[in-house]
Amino acid sequence: MAKSMMDRDMLKVLYSEEQIKARIQEMGDELYEQFKDRNPLFLGVLKGSFIFMADIVRACQIKSDIEFIAVSSYQNGTSSSGVVQITHDLQQDITDREIIVIEDILDSGNTLYFLKNYFMTKGAKSVTVVTLLDKPSRRVKPVKADMAGFEVPDEFVVGYGLDYAQQYRNMPYIGVLKPEVYSK
Ligand code: PRP
Image (cartoon, rainbow, N blue to C red; front, side):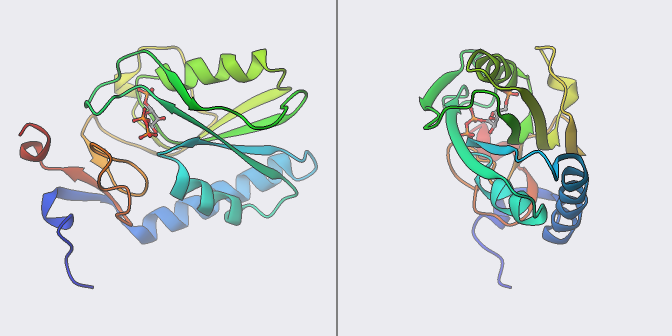
């Protein structure tokens, strides 16, 4: 395939399409074993999780339904403001539901710390955190993933749903952005 304009902004590829696909299938298999009789609600955190969500639900063929919530805390910067805003709320009652939260990345933990509490106050029976990427070196809130695809170093990662200033989400792999791109 021809190199895209976006490829030129990448310092390196962290995880290829093939690596991501293989890891997601392993995660789907694990979730299948854990949740096959529990009719969980897959709850994707927009926007970043939209591609991972589509792939993980197909990698885990269990009776389940799907919901989304949209939050934002980065406001186009490269570090979390700490203030989490719900920009699109749940559209259904989650009382007594077993929630599988689907995230693209767990970074400072601000988003998931807020969301876990939010879902519990809305009456969820359980909240299981599944993230494709985990960046534990940046954590400021006490949040742990129940399942993480890859542990990533403290570099600016984009692609496969992750953005910089709303761009690069449609790259099929996860790459590290060249510093000159975000320090312009
Ligand atoms: C990103 C990502 C997570 C969150 C993780 O969302 O999708 O939701 O940041 O970072 P944290 O652990 O430091 O809170 P963002 O607020 O950038 O919105 P987006 O999903 O629309 O990209």
